[in-house]
Image 1 (tube, rainbow, N blue to C red):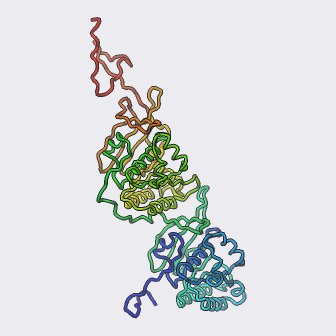
Image 2 (image 1 turned 135 degrees about the vertical axis):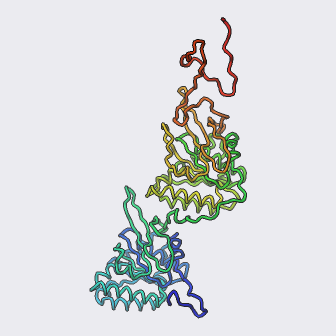
Image 3 (image 1 turned 45 degrees about the vertical axis):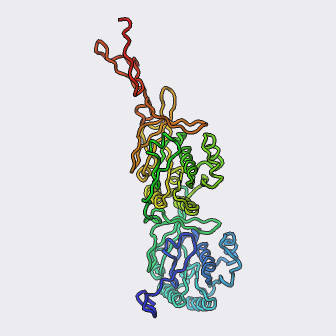
Length: 525
């Protein structure tokens, strides 16, 4: 039945889909593979082709109570392949051979050609009442074809058979040219790749063709673990159309630090994103933890998502400066999600974070502290993706009404303020700068609010003290000058003399602002 035909009720036929059950692959395909369609799956050795189609078969049996036939045209024995698959969690030996039937077609195509192979396929699919059919090793079949036309006719016959039986078919082969005859005849072409990008080995999935349906174009990260294959769509494509941001009630989300909260007009607006930018040791992590603890104290759920310090050390660090983090972690108000310093995939990290947020019990206002943006940057295979990735991620968090604080690290000392992730400052509503300043051979911590959309704020410089009693933000830092260069200087007063000349350097230091200067002494006149 063609796409323009109607059924007996006069309605167009339903678009029946066969879901793969592979994490996020069906999302990329906007619902899964079309029932009765024929699809080419190609990729180099080691890219995950065999795992993908076997995982699809087991998922199809579990979810749809379907029946699968897996035919190999390769010399590798089924026993060897099954031994490799047995270590993966989706593998279920009890489904073999009743619901998942493995059969070799190598000898038949070698001795009887395509005519004999088609008869074997037709008889097996009908006998087994198969709903999914896999042919693994199509490059071997092509080697036995006398001409390219003969091979094309064989693929066309497979397509007609699959449509007649309503059996969704997958043709698995090594990488070929996209203009290959097989790819022109099938309903869809999916490619798995395995490449070295710098020192990293990166697996990706690309859908080149998918008839009769929209799909997510471009490359998507592939991860193989003991669970099998997982696909990670690009975050900027996956969340290209986030839901509307919260606009009803947007209360202030305080840090629990009175003077700092005053600078922010009472706190951050609910559902906004704030960048905490600063050098190592300036207090970014402690400030972010203070934000979570203050939320928990107010009954708001929070989550820490970080890359550097494991939870026990994080709790110890917070408790040492008077931040009662452990109490709220134990009662479930704050979740600590630590990503060990391993080789991560950027989109996978974003998915983990969002899935944890969605899995948590709903509360009206929630807080997130990401420590820090450089963890995502280090995981990016393509650095040019980082700006649009951060934009998509922060937009998605806004649509979930998550108030987010994310840190980014500056160099320890630098003559100019150069943001390592300038795009973060663009997508964040607020930017808070934490820096060191050297004055009279002493190092001071300074804090300032550089930007805050939709709100008034105090842009003055404040000194920050971190003590066992907690974080203290001072009223001001009067003596700092040229602070953006990282160097503080004490201003010198210019006092007129009787001869009209400027005083000597250091003759009269500037008094603190707001205090009346003392008159010069008249004694001795």
